[in-house]
Image 1 (cartoon, rainbow, N blue to C red):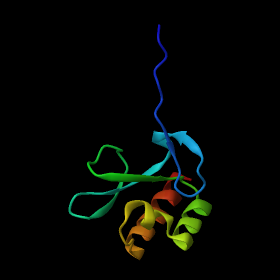
Image 2 (cartoon, rainbow, N blue to C red):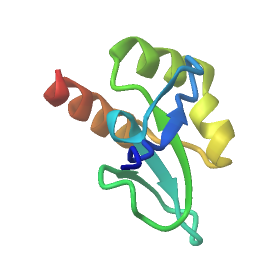
Image 3 (spheres, helix red, strand yellow):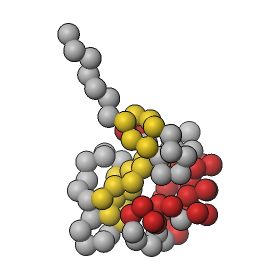
Image 4 (tube, helix red, strand yellow):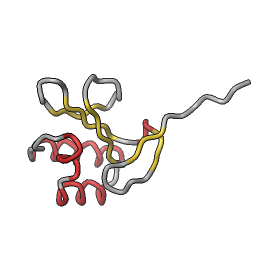
Length: 89
């Protein structure tokens, strides 16, 4: 019997490979609207971040998420990410 393959993704900040379900996905759709994708199935360009406060703080400071998605990320999105990470811990 074959083992089921687990999709791995890399965090934008720490470059650590982790299973896709453990990471938080940010999506930019065709209209350029940015949203947090907790299902991992929304259409659009995606970037992943670890559910750790350290990674989120570094991403906010270095703006790597903005560069990866080629869109300016507002404080509302960062606040939403902070609340998601706090609820997961």
